[in-house]
Image (cartoon, rainbow, N blue to C red; front, side, top):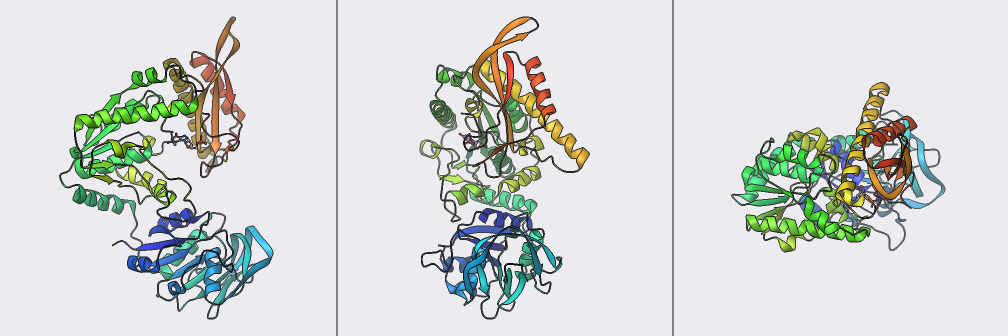
Length: 523
Ligand code: XMP
């Protein structure tokens, strides 16, 4: 049993961040809704419990709450923001609407005698975001931090191991947030810190071996980070009992198909059965004459299932269908946390009904994305794949406006390769020269092809060619995004190279639109 800290989610926007920070400190952490029964929590026997923030006022009748027993079972509890107020409210403190709303970076004064505030300065910046405040701490609690407007920025009952913190240590704007959370898990919960990717990989290999026995496993490998790491892990555990089907739909980035084959195919470093299905022409035929975006998506998705089914048919019945589901998918599909029962997530939409298998295998379902990457490196998967940008399932199909043709695919592949190469080089140079990341560093960047042809002139000749659209966005969650302020000289270099090197293009445009109103992809 690995030591575990549990986050009880009250609908705060930072619920996953809290869990990630605890794991970064070396302690495994899982998120559960505040509706989770106390008996279930007790059964898990966690080393500590953290209550998250949330949008409500704890003193209102219909607000999320928790049984008082939670504070009496002897397991350390740390309440953050709403969690802190709720703890104080339940235990007899006074929580009400604050005379002054605190929001943003706030100077905070700490009592260093507290186990959670040892070894941090007596005064530093924290991130506050609250309407209500703790006016008076509950009986038995000692105030351990305050601000100008907040008499109880933190309070604790050391003997009962109960800690209430009004600010958000999980947010990077809190200067010593990492240290505070680390103090909690080590000084208060007395964790040893056994959450390491190396151990995870070894434990998972053992667990997969046990579960699979001599069974057969089938995995749809897309070449994205998650399915690739799943393939690497399964291959180390069960070798040739694993078959990976990689469908090249002809809508991948330049050289991507060959790259995936080089890593996972017979010449690569992994022991598995690798089947590359070259379905390019099949997709181009199906997509001929189709220009409506949703139709294109549907055709690409359905065709994937058909191709995969055919291949699975050749293999025959398998025991397990493996999927690259990761922890945020689990939380967001409502199985874990509270805040985001917003979308239900299916990694391989439609497949489970149509392929003959006994059980599903999800070897990454406990990991956050950054942990998946670490596990990938641990398994020896090359960095260029492990740090790949997000790439949509329908691929370049959603980056070509209007009808998809083989020629257009080639144009967008070439333009995109130049753009990514130049941006990557510029980012590396910036980091080398300045010792920090450029503040324009985009989270996703790619070239797309518009459906516009226009007149140009090249070497005294009239041209009538396509316009390429460059997109680069900064985003945290991909739900909203800002266009990234890539320096003009870089954009200029990209433009010159695309015009000179990519046949069929005579204009290059930069997309300034944020999301909303735009989406990140252009279809
Ligand atoms: P949008 O265009 O919706 O994109 O702003 C948000 C993020 O999701 C990715 N995306 C997709 N990923 N299948 C996927 O697996 C899709 O159909 C799809 N459409 C968009 C997009 O690349 C961005 O990261």
